[in-house]
Amino acid sequence: GDVARGIDPADRKRTAAEESAERERALTFRELYDKWLAEVGQHKKSARCDRSTSKKFVGIENRKAREITTGQIESILGGLRDKPVMANRTLALLRTVLRFGVRCGVLESDPTAHIRKRPESQRIVPLPPRAELDKLYAALDAHPDQSGANAIKLLFWTGSRLREVLHAKWDQFDLERGEFHKRETKTGPVIIPLDPLALDLLRKMKKTATSEWLFPSRVKGKPRYDVREVWDAARTAIGRSELHVHDLRHFYASALINEGAPLHLIAPLLGHRSSQITARYAHLRPETLRAERERLTVAIAPPAPKRIAPPAKRERHHKARRKAVVR
Image (cartoon, rainbow, N blue to C red; front, side):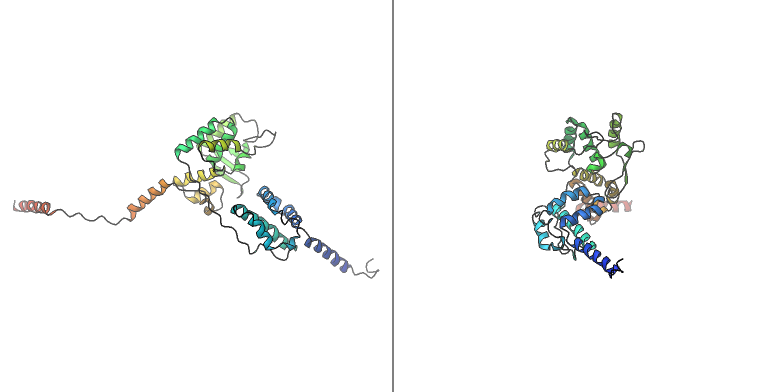
């Protein structure tokens, strides 16, 4: 029909493709972000965190994606000057979305290409001294919410992430073999051996369990969401209001390394791909470092100087030898 009317069908296809490409190029950043989220982002394990981070894009979300400049992105990151970790997460998400736009033909280039990450200070959280740990356990045992207290203990005794424990189901635990089968972690499925402390606690909890979840919420069929109130009471009891629940992973890793466990064995217990990441969690106590330093001192010390006897003592020694020879 097109040929009979003198129309080239190829022209019609080219026109449709050009119109589609033009619509793509006219996308706003919010529309591009939604397109990325629908095709890629929703499958990421950090999808919930990404949605929270995307709230920082208010300044550019209604602009055409292809018109966004490096200066506008720097302006967004400048508002997070005192929060380098959040600034880097925001930059990473922006870069991911904009590079997706380049692949789709929405943008010609990535405006974040020459923006560097902010330097982050490493968080050092060594294992608390025994007295503080005793206070922490006492506060947990005295709290009226024993379900939340048990969750915090398991976080500490397994070195797990918050969601790995709160969203765990009973079928993930082999209490006979003492294993925790983690199905959804940042590095995929992981099986970790359970510490006797954790195993004993789980066996006690199992006797009164009425749900498939270890820690069910008040909403039927849903797991517990957080342990904020219990943790606030526990850290207040030891006078450490700056601690986060995630710091319990630091405590766990620090306890292992102070007992002599090597980083390459601690890494799989924490669910890390490499020991380099684990090194940011495992902190040596000053006492451990001091003991190692003393061992090193013995190993590298020069030989002790030979002791020379005083002249009077040497003379008595020689007289005794002469008398022995005469006899």
